[in-house]
Length: 327
Ligand code: TRP
Image (cartoon, rainbow, N blue to C red; front, side):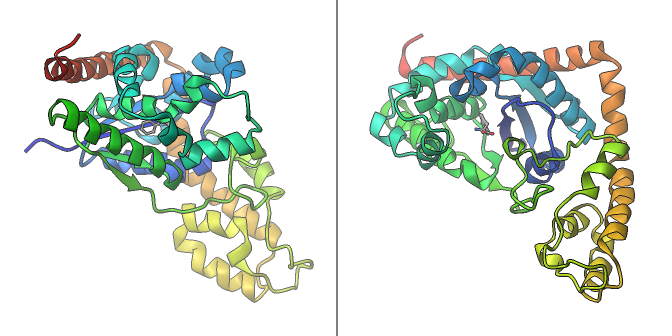
């Protein structure tokens, strides 16, 4: 039986951090065992909200692909590709633009939030409003059955399903309605205890060198009520404890106990975590470094991925042309 198809993507904003890893990438690596996977660098999507970042897109794409390969996305099994290399997405996007109302796009909660948070009122591009339509094209160009995403992306997936339904209704039932596979490890704290996010400057890169991991963890957020070494702490509000749960789960329980009883101080606790994480992430760092030292191989991987993606997207477009009797 043919495997189900998965597509997911990430905007290239530079190196990935621990939050990106636990929230998505690590899950993608596992999904490769059971699905035909397409993983896409969503470079056009960067332009919808950050035109000024255009000049960094190629360099950031490279960094992200290295993070993907380092983390274990396997080009033998998965298709790693770049959105802007597959022009079929643009054609499908254009067609989908006819299937969705302006009102529906304006009601998209992600859009409303961005307009509010980025202070964009009056400065919104047509492309920004159409962001989820392009995302629907990304997904449906591969007739994906499922899309691993964070919870924040579920409204976009709902829109994708609506577009598929409408297409099927008007022209003929050829598009699946993909389901979302929501990643379980919920909110991942940054080094200041708030959600880990590049814009908050509280990240640790997946590719961080040992020294960098040590120095970043040294100043990371712990229980603010624990002022003195001998005060008992509360691991449940401590970022360091979440990092234990994530990267050294076998030590998490002991850590919580020794924190609550003040047997272990924060300085020791952080050092121990740093040692552990440095070791756990070493294979990823080393694999990344091997690819980084061999740019020709990375070029080949990306070129081959784009070829495979294009082939599949063309197959879908042929179907679409036949069904719509246009193009
Ligand atoms: N919108 C996603 C994000 O902000 C990126 C993305 C673009 C995507 N196209 C996609 C995710 C298709 C899943 C499927 O990260």
